[in-house]
Image (cartoon, rainbow, N blue to C red; front, side):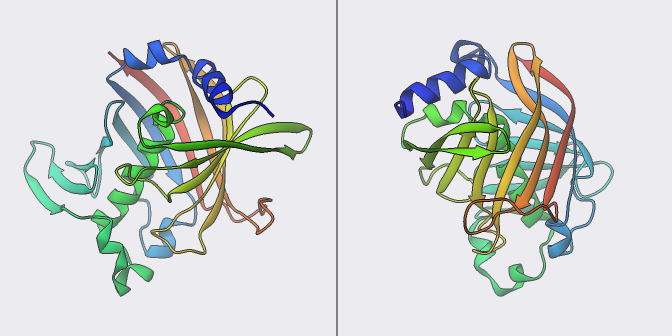
Length: 244
């Protein structure tokens, strides 16, 4: 088993390299999403089809459309807001994560709740592995994982508190080329039961950045193996534009 820095460096290079990432300011992606997770909180079709404008320098993303035609959703760290296309603020929540501690959130989410969940999730997915280089991350390589006919090296990562994410401790799986194949986490905004095995597939090159264009999130058993159903979340990336 090699050093965690060796594996992280390999992953960075496999996804386009640090130099290329540092020249990018924004990723504009056409994305479709579905699965059973959001309907569990009575949010149906919230992220069915949208454009995401994803910052590479900070936790920030704009979803268009969001919550209806002529509206957009803005996720910015721990603040979320819904705006008109002309920029008028229609709804806003300044401490979005704290809101999930209320009893209501165990059964029903409003649009701002869904915006926070989708915002931090999509931002994380497009920022890994590069975001792992930031200060405050604690990273260690753990035993490799065998799945089907492949062996994947793994990084256990502890996120710093200033990075919005599913949970502080996550595990990332990389193939022999250094491509991200899977990540494990608990989606704490749903509850401690929401243990996920998240698969990354169909990696494609977009102007020098290598991005998975198909993702599937499955429930994770206590031994780490995935369950075959239901699909909690699926994500398909149809188009990507890289902006410097």
